[in-house]
Image (tube, rainbow, N blue to C red; front, side, top):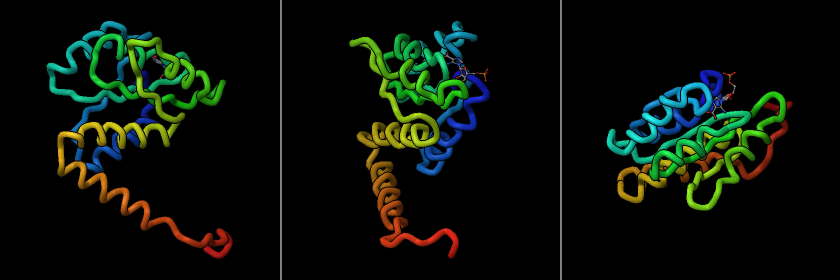
Length: 156
Ligand SMILES: Nc1c(C(=O)O)ncn1[C@@H]1O[C@H](COP(=O)(O)O)[C@@H](O)[C@H]1O
């Protein structure tokens, strides 16, 4: 993530990865504030055994794109909701990459963070049958949890 302030959003990705038993690390790396750290992180990622990178940032969110510029590993971009523009700035900064340098862009905020983790897990699951089974189980659990009939919150 680009800043400590993004953790409130990106922690939802980390929590989902933990729930699925996917080993991961969390780091603050900024294309703007720590450009050398970003270059070192992204160029060294494959050699350190990383397989997918989730990059979340807000505002002028260049982190995912610059990360993808430095590595051909899959990069999933999470637009963090900004105060000024509600995350539209983050989304548009991340999504419109030039052909040749892809970033898989997710939704703004918490849903995007959760789905980035699920998508990262789905990518890893193509070579990990046990993880694929855990993803299927999670889907079944989600389906089971959706009630057929709505309840009035006042009755709860
Ligand atoms: N967009 C980027 C990048 C980057 O793209 O490299 N680095 C930090 N930031 C963003 O600045 C916002 C405000 O950061 P602060 O809360 O630290 O001022 C954060 O959402 C962060 O992702």
